[in-house]
Image (tube, rainbow, N blue to C red):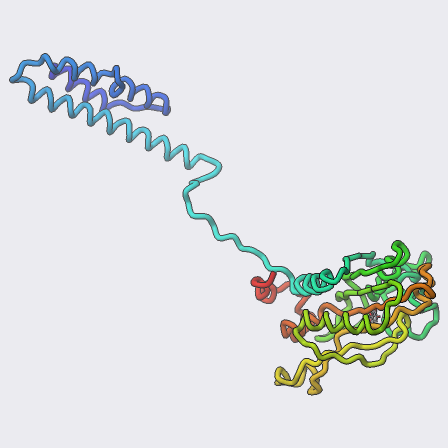
Length: 339
Ligand code: DAH
């Protein structure tokens, strides 16, 4: 029996398998409940006493060798299977995911939309390539009107007339054409002007237009709305309305907020006055309502328009408007923490 067991130890040590199934068969053959070792241990009971020590040791050796072999082969299969797997090592710690940041223009746009959303304004959009009617004529700026020069235009075609919109007020016209009062809408978007690029001006920038039309809308409603906006957006509650001129509103005003002088270290933000202009506004001119088939004897409304870059520059102290369009990740990554 001893010779037989020693031979089996040799067999076990020499065993090799090419598949996992072969390893399992081997395990059952030697270590299974009806396996070789079970039989041998059964026979061991009848072994004469003086042989028990040697044969017992040999049997334990055989069991150890078989167990080691099974484990060794199993491990080797698992490792190679894993390295071949398309998933790689699933227990490996993951690569850090490099999340991007929202663009500051989007952040500020969303903030403004959110503030007005709370008082019932919905978002509307219009095309960037516009016609003369929606960008100018319907807004009380007929052909040869001198105020057209206020906004240098990129013209695309003469007939049919196509241009890049110079302001988001064009969406006002479209919205009024397609909706009936009460109207409460906010139109954010890109606008284009044929201007020299500098630290403060760009030929492409963003605006948000607001429009409110209903019965009995007054200048007091406009002022309250502006006050609410400046409080929510900047935490400032001192504003002033300076009389101004826009062809599409009458009366018109420019809105200044009192920014204070504490931040005026270099006199750049408010030029030492403490006041800062943030938007244009006014009561919608009756002609503009008429052009969109809204009866000005029944309805009145207010409108306002502001530049998003200007507000973003203010909030984040960005010194140069060109930084918004350079896509320098060192600039953009600074907005990672803002949603
Ligand atoms: N469209 C004007 C601009 O681009 C801004 C503006 C001023 C819009 C007054 C308005 C408004 O709706 O009432 O400069």
